[in-house]
Image (cartoon, rainbow, N blue to C red; front, side, top):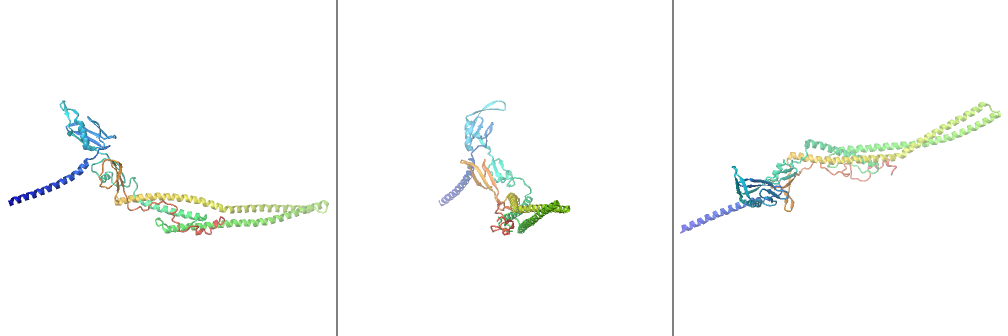
Length: 462
């Protein structure tokens, strides 16, 4: 009896262990079956190609693409709506449709045999899935055939891998070096034109305080800025000195003309008095000669004296007219000097503004090119760079939806994958929106420049 109980207990214990193992195996098998069942629930859609096979009847083997209206066309069946339905349901519907049909099959020896199709003989599979699409930072974006259980990483591999160089370009290292040189040269040109702008506005009485300090993000040395500023300052001083000398010369010419006019006017007056006196003497001499009281040589001398005084009078009048004309010319130049200077400065200001805008546009363009080549160079050095951003656009029941994915996300037929590479290291010279505030010469002060405080060029206009 005790042995029987022991054997029974051992039997129960072994049975319990076996049952536990069977339960665990059953749960494992069930867990493995769940994803398989989920994958089998794939629903056919427009763009898929189905292959229908009837066992024993090779003549009925048929590939049927799902048309835009969601239908397929099969022999003996006709049009059948399949879009949005799982394969098991489609297979059952095709089998049910063929089970009611009679197919006449001709044997090798020429006899005709009637074949009754059974629903279990029908098999339907997806021969070709809808293609998937990839766009963005890949070498060859476009359409690719779908492979079951394929991932975004595999699709990127089919597209040639990550690549930001969609457009072929020269060696990015040499290109980057040339662009950096051009970028620095443009900044120097910008500083030069802005310094010229400061000088012109100073002459016009609108200048701001100038500073020879370059911005921290501008690839221009302080020494270069100082040389540019010093050159424009010296040019301004020289131009002011030349203007002052020109104005002083014209003013001196006007004063000298006034003095000469005064002297010549007095001389003309005396010449007129002398001429009248000689005319009177000639008249007296003529009267006396008529009375016989004076000889003819005395009359001749009187006439010669009148002629001489008349000539001196004409010469003085001509000289006076010449001096007045020269004085009017000096006065006209002096009056026009300020207006002509302002017109020249306004024209120069317009040309300088145009050049400044052109340089700013070139700086923007070269900065963007430099950013692109720096990203390409970074890619060549570090490979793909930082982790890519992958988005999947998938058509769902409520329309297209965007899914944030990773490289190991499994794709579905018809997916559109967008790939974007992001780099942590910025460009050598980030492009900036350049405006008048990006002035490497602008100081903190406002108002008129110190150099223009006592500007003699503007004395007549203030």
